[in-house]
Image (tube, rainbow, N blue to C red; front, top):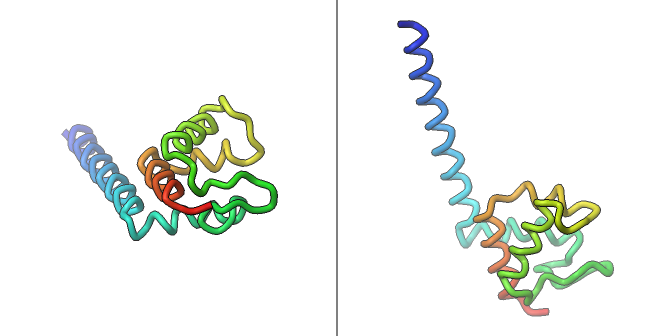
Amino acid sequence: MKKKMMTGVAAIVCALMATVGQNAAAQSTAPQNVKYLAANCANCHGTNGAGSQGLPSLAGLKKEYIIEQMNNFKSGAREATLMHQISKGYTDEQVAAMAAFFEQQKK
């Protein structure tokens, strides 16, 4: 009986953790937060993705292209020094939100 109760408690805890994770991802892709996510890219790609230090500009690139490249970094299909690790830190929803943000920026 005690083992069944612990299994039930563990299932509830897992369900709660999944819900919290989903809520956090949804909050992070809210319009007011996307600019903060995209700001993480500024160190290498410049403010609002305008390009910096010889690295590619993200500003004005098509959303689909950015998503494709991030997926290529995640999977290892595209080689990189840092992006293969950085890309794994974002959910698909976050990548799509940042891609939409960069698409709207001027070069």
